Image (tube, rainbow, N blue to C red; front, side, top):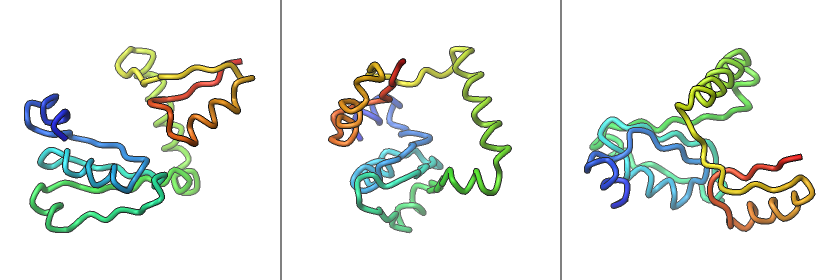
Length: 128
């Protein structure tokens, strides 16, 4: 939390994307700025977290769930539009995803083991 506060001049994060849940969710909600947004997309930690209503009220933040499969079912056009926007933003250099590990396709078992044991940070990319 201290690093987030330091990086934001004490304000906190406007948006936190959380695919982990559990303790990460708990820490993430404490790092939010006033009127921030916590986007939860999964619970890979194994623990489904809870957001105390008093904390949500005091910091006036939103907790938003995003279940991609539901978008494919209910709004497939939105998925395509979002993908197109992300590709455009990347091409313009406006976003730069953290790709920390690159492996040849023949190293896929090793890459998957690294993901499974949480020995990775950022994206893991397999190349042909």
